[in-house]
Image 1 (tube, one colour):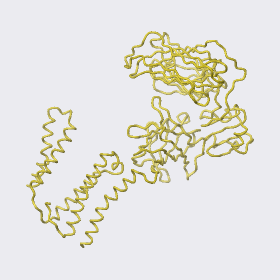
Image 2: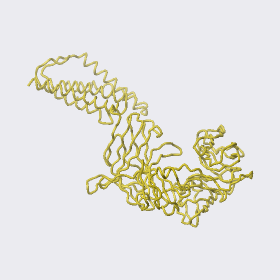
Image 3: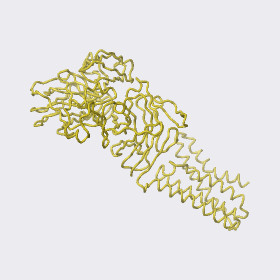
Image 4: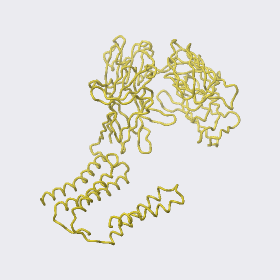
Length: 471
Length: 119
């Protein structure tokens, strides 16, 4: 009896010692990999349930007794709470997708504006294509008519750039404009653009010259600094211009009289496409841009600002784009209006609602924003005059196109199709964590990108989300 | 100590369980305080407190002989009273004039409970 008591004593002492050992193992991760397995509906200290509820269906159990939850709105997101520093994360998603052309997921890398490093989970346009397909080293080459036996052969002797569409990758074929000659004529973009923007321009035997006229509207607290940076075709910065805050960091709405001017200039630049990034806050309204460049296109998004304190009546803007799907939003009652895109009309009926419109006509189409105070978003380019428009990018495959509409013979994609596990598709994406935005407690945010999900009444059914965290 | 050494198996086991639980509670609670989430991500550190209470009650049932040490009881009561007072003081900033009253009540609470148990 006494021996039994001693044995129980030993067990009682060993239990907390063992627990402490297990906790230390969890913390220090001596194996180098910390694995978090999470099924929908399970409580986890490391992976949260999907959010927000308004874009999700209730959790349900399917006929195989598996817990599932369907995403029905865009974007849905979740958080991962690592308990220590990790260098790399691999996230695996078990899902079903019957309707959406493209599903992507990525981690939040930047705040204000929020930027996600989206990677493909499922591309049905590629997976369901009848074109000839080559898979090599995480790349896919689709060929309308088979010309190449391998990706190596494709890279060695690529077709002309206008015959290639790309997805999540690019091709080292520089854009050159035939018959382009430089001029000294100053072109004026007479439009109010609010906050951060990116645009591309083309240079050949000419200096780069942009004069940005702007107002600091002081509507939000904080400094309003402008940093304009020019990047060459290799993505390297070639010149930069800065403008300091006006000294008023409050949100009192007091504005200095007149327009301020920031000159962005560089000479002796090689022929090619240059990207200009205007990095600033939403308090900065660019009222006018003067340039000697003939070609200027804005990338993916423009925010046509209101013109309170600048001019009456507000002038709005006319944009020109080849994109086939646009989204609009205003944040104020004054921005409620009816826009025209091609022959389609879209009524922005209330603030803080995104409105989408498809443009059916081919080629360059006009988008009319009558009164401004509207964010316009697409996956493509905008110009403020038809003559300024050019498209230096390779044709991009996105959710709003089909292979036939791309009018190309080849599609090169950085994409690995998800594997099949029973009824589920399983996609894995690898994320270097140093690029992720981490909250104070180290939390990372991951978001799904499910374009067209509302329009198609689509569902992305999630079953499991696992993570492998590498120390 | 206030207990007497015994060779009764049940008393040995419950006494060990009580001591291990109390020490574990303090160690794990401190670890979680130093590195938030170290323990609480996986389970509640208060599980050890629950174990300590259960083993403590069982031990008190088994214990047949003990030595009364009033000074030790006094020290524990004062320490516990001070601890409760500090927590209460930090959590009752909005109570203004009632704050001191409640803190005093908390300080004497261990002593009141002790007296009730003794009687």
